[in-house]
Length: 336
Ligand code: TYM
View 1 (cartoon, protein in one colour):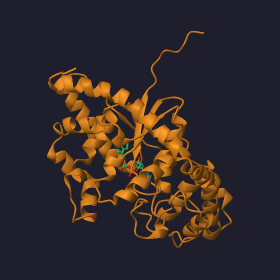
View 2 (cartoon, rainbow, N blue to C red):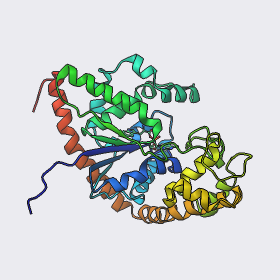
View 3 (spheres, rainbow, N blue to C red):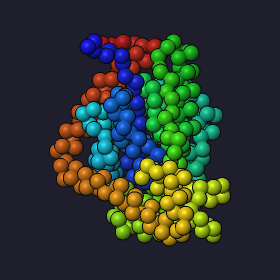
View 4 (tube, rainbow, N blue to C red):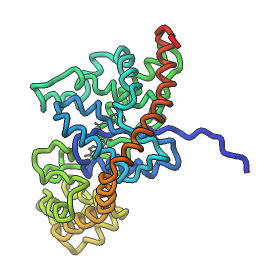
């Protein structure tokens, strides 16, 4: 049989090492990363440089980065099939960041909703990195000429900016970058807080009951779901105005594979208490293998190091080609 020489499409995505991932990170992004590994050339990164936009304790930060790396492997990223690496290990991201910053307008960055939110949250440290964060994100994607970027809904605006930067650069310097497409799940793209279902579930929520962390134990997960805010109606039904129940149904559907009709009929004669318990149990059972694998990986630091070192070398090999091309295009003097 003739070999299939058709080039696979390239996927890039990243996640910040700012603590144990939430169920939102998992459902909106990471759980979708693994199944893409056969069909695409996947590159996944722990984006530690992005995390530096908020003040961090260096010792804790180093540990969190290692844990985040182990967590993506525990969630099914195969470091041989895919390239899995830590962003600061590959200098291409920072190199391209500067060039792209010079092709990005102040006005564009000022419109980013995440910048507005984060600068309100940390008024004592509205640093330049926080402002130019989306440029680094564009560099992450464009330095591999990624075709597709699997993300949750909250990153859509950043991806649109990356596309605009790429188009602008190509118009100015000739075809250089692939224009990346977002890959946002039709379901679960925005998992909501368990305490305020109008807000997204976020690691930084001050209320510990608002957020499920994917390493929470079974009792904790069940307890948090039992306390989830719902409504005064008592029917398990997906409908407008039932944000809390809609969120729980979405989560339940994502971990069990059942659709909304099935869920409605399974719980037609039951109350919210039974449903919340079922969601808690299903989520805890679904995440159990992740917890087990994570513990194994954290006990084998030498293996983790081997994986992220190899990942960074493979990532650099690809990205450096693009950076070299970009350097030439913008008119830097070649010295090699
Ligand atoms: P981060 O680290 O905040 O989140 C990682 C991924 O999780 C998704 N996500 C959610 N999805 C559904 N519901 C939620 N409640 C929820 N919370 C988070 C995010 O959309 C994201 O896909 N800027 C990015 C990291 C990044 C990146 C990149 C992503 C840096 N460079 C290049 C893609 C490509 C971020 O802060 O994600």
